[in-house]
Amino acid sequence: MSRDINELKTKANIIRRDILEMVFNIRSGHLGGSFSMVEMLTALYFDEMRYDPAVPDDPERDRFVLSKGHTAPALYATLANAGFFPKEKLLTSFRRIDCMLQGHPDMKKTPGVEMTSGSLGIGLSAANGMALANRYEGRRGRVYCMIGDGELNEGQIWEAAATAAHYYLDNLTALIDVNGLQNDASTKNVKNMLDIKAKWEAFGWHTLEIDGHDFNAIFGALDAARSRKGQPTAIIAHTVKGKGISFMEHVVAFHGKTPSEEEYRIGMQELKEAAL
Image 1 (tube, rainbow, N blue to C red):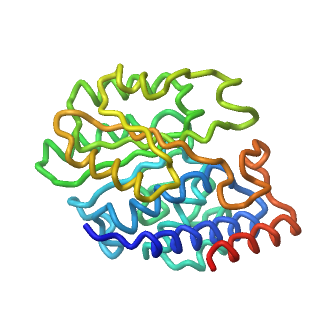
Image 2: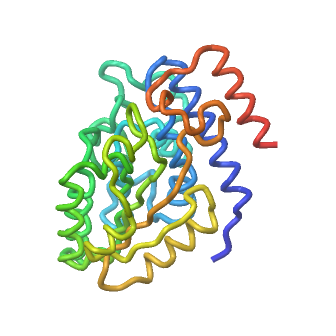
């Protein structure tokens, strides 16, 4: 498959600018973890996944579950750029009462959202059900589930991991966004999960470890997941929280902090310069 990596990098930069603008506009939202997964979302929605924005409920579509639902800004910006709804909605509907882009994804309000999420730990269980349903119905659609590394503290993730391996869900791929930070501290200080890759392997998953900002590495892992038979695949993606804006990178405060006007201006300028 021929992929234009430079075009995808440009798309990722646009998505980051959209995320920054929508969060600053409403003065609310989660930037750090949204920025860390942009390349993975870009790879999925602009190359890997099969879907039609005009028919969002096509039973044969590939599905994406955002288990770490607080990073909804990244999903919304991606869906808008993919054509699921007009981009102006990012500035008029995000985190407003009764609007289509709630603070956490709501499948009843937003075209393209496959699962209402936000309560951490539940996304992989839902993704299991989707993957099982596809198998039983003879559908070809694959299921992708984005999980945060802080979210791995939740026991339900591991129950779901065991279930997926038990049912040999080779149409399921989990992407673990390992940015090393959660709400108010490093993940190792809150609850050290030790060797994450070894854990997923022990639960029976085909497990790969990559740089989550390297498109070639991402596609290599996605290709391997698609060709793997008899096992679900976990992609352990090492990322940078706040990736793309120098003063946000590796800074735990930007898990949920809204940038000041000066920080917004500098951040947007950095992103525009990176696109040149």
